[in-house]
Image 1 (cartoon, rainbow, N blue to C red):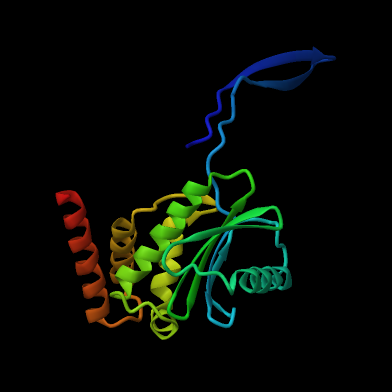
Image 2: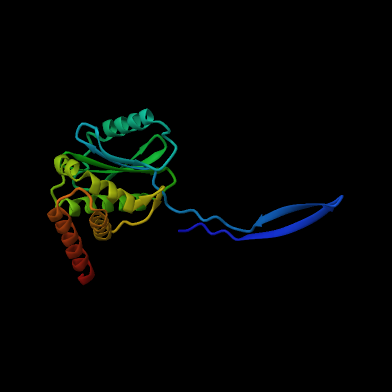
Length: 208
């Protein structure tokens, strides 16, 4: 959703001793609509170390506080069985949705008042887009070798906490496109394959 504001301004002119003073009185009749937001997206390895992370909230103002959060959430979820499907946990007044594959741990964090299904959709979109871009070789080695693709992927999903896109094929397609336009340091074959896979996935989706 988009915040909608209607502003009405009335300008009052007052003349005092030949000096004009302009006063702007602004009235807002707007009703601010809330929209789903994400506080962070984390991709950690099987030891809880960073692979790729993005924060969109001031809840963790320093790098040390971010690292502490990552360590805590990793430790809390380590023994869970989140490989078959995503799981949910409450942590420090936040909702954390997470899913594991191979030696990678995917996390999406939102406030305790956020819709769990929406956060889960963001997580699944991120997970599936990474799988498309890595051609289903989703592990730490492949992720580190294509880190720029994953970071672009995060930028396509969330901007400043606002959810932009959750469709994996759309995300992967845009990432491949940006990579080609920016002449990113990736093999031409990798980019072409990622784009082809995303296109095939989109075609299958439309035909369903």
